[in-house]
Amino acid sequence: MILDIINKKRLGKELSYREIDYFFNGYLEGEIADYQMSSLLMAICINGMTDEEIFSLTKVFVDSGEVLDFSDIEGIKVDKHSTGGIGDKTTLIIAPIVASLGIPVIKMSGRGLGYTGGTIDKLESIPGFRINLKDREIEKQVKEIGVVITGQTRDLAPMDKVIYALRDVTATVSSIPLIASSIMSKKIASGADKILIDVKYGNGALLKTKEEAKELSKLMVKIGEVYGREVRTMLSDMNTPLGRCVGNSLEVLEAIDVLKGKDDSSNLFNLCVDLASEMVSMGKEIPEEEAKKLVIESIDSGKAFKKFEELVNHQEGDLKGIKVSDNTIKVRSTKSGEITKINALELGKLSLLLGAGKVKKTDKIDYSVGIKLNKLVGNKVEKGDVLMTLYVNKNTPDAKIDDIFTIE
Image (cartoon, helix red, strand yellow):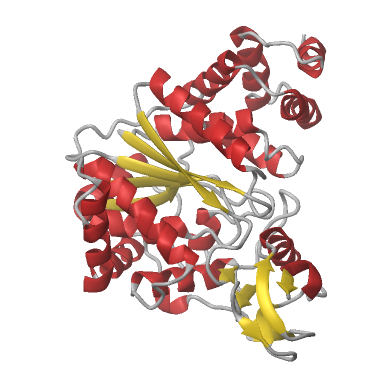
């Protein structure tokens, strides 16, 4: 039956709920091998899935573990998810902003996929930060300070956790059906009342075109309707990296700067304000313009950063202990002109080579390495100006400047 299911999807035929349930639960229970699941994932990646197959797969993921119930916590619980991109540290910024405005935020985040960084990886660069909270700890913390960011609990959609890890190393991360089922199963199981999805597209995202982003958006709204959840989506461009930094510790430090109001003009700041405003609009059921004023006030008054400090302290992190590598390489421009493009994908690949992400499941992440952009799109540069600084340890790959920066 295993080979029949793989072959059926290889031929582009629709799988029944029974077949999907049998195969995926068989993998979870160790009765189906990695190479067999990899074959099915690749067939799905190539041939896609119907809406009914996607609803079935989402149900299998949700039913593989517990569904959390936070109904006794006052207020509308609004969750946010990003489909991932280069330099995407938005959760670290948005969660404390929204929580500082009285909206409870229970955020269960994942690790990096491919060259895109994961929120949990970034948080682990904060010494001592606990990313595996138990259900009762999550509820207690939200009641005390209104916000928690944790890894997926062991019993929450465990099916997704094992598939997520396999997708990362089998070139199947960009499959729209797999992305939709993965995201929505976790959001539904984690007990959110309303869900906001930041769907990224471009060369530095899992989805390359705006059309794919729209397709995924519509699909997740449909899944939300099946489960009685309000789902809103925002589309954001990831052809250019988000913010100045790529790499775990560097991105946490950049997030702190945004929360402190030290960076109020970058694409990172603007996107975070837009996302936080949408969440506040959903949580307080107020117009987005009114929500945006509250978001800006939270940053300007220091409430947002104070909430971030509370979050880190409650999860036993030490912000003063964040370290970046002392070994740096300055990459200089070979000509004068204006920067018209910074290739997010190439920057992500470079960060992976430095050790900021995983190529294999068994790889260890070096939280202290990464890239800081000294120049951004629109900046004029002279020959010899520093374009970016590489923070390195063991791996010091050559930076292909012309592949990353377009200077005209």
